[in-house]
Image (cartoon, rainbow, N blue to C red):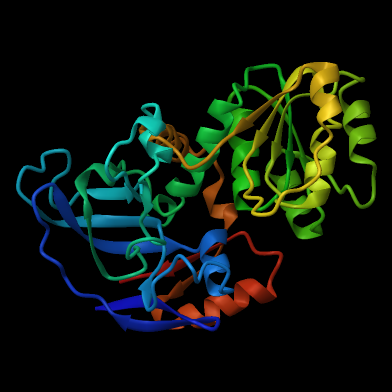
Length: 337
């Protein structure tokens, strides 16, 4: 059995995957597909070497089949097809305020602990979400990023009839746009890559290239001056941060989705002047996975069009290199069995 191991220096090698007998409360999985996330690319680039122990099996966007159960597990059965919510909560702390998905002692499986880009993977059973038979395992590997989008839209309190602007048209930005549309919102996507702009248009999303048009002016024209009720900053760029405060209407919301590891200037006057609210959105909770599975099963997320390529685990290094060389791509999956 095989695994994909990050070994440093932009190297993801093929190693072995051991079948670890599940302890009480755990399940052993036969992994089907694992998506490559932006976080995995950061790991590949060496940006998280201080956090990742090498060699480390990476990956967290997983679909799998349950192969073996530890004692006391009744939430899933052997043979169930599942998606994995890759969070290890650790010891609760008063600081958490009851929100264990972003708790003080949270460990992210696939970064802080061995991940799912391997043939056999043993995880806590509470991380597993059964998939309906109508949903392919390829699409099952898209549930984790879709759950991110469901969480972001839920925290943004998006309602039917509202206008949302999504800054950044990568996998998460596109999924946020599609989830918001399912809430009845009108969505405008800001993206600089022409292939992603074209894809957004085929998915029924109005798209604007901010290098060719002034984004605030374009949103104003498209909304007859009303502007946006909710803005999602997904680009992680200084330009995105600068643009986000120009777009909300009075008491509009800004949802910070992208990770900004370094401080960036923010126009705080806009928050005061229009009583804008900013919301941080990180990871997901159980209900977000449940919603993502339902939307995917109903065909609402156009997952076939978001999957760029599926490669065998033997070609994991070439796949990471292809992602670096192909800014047009959306989601690459690794076939782990």
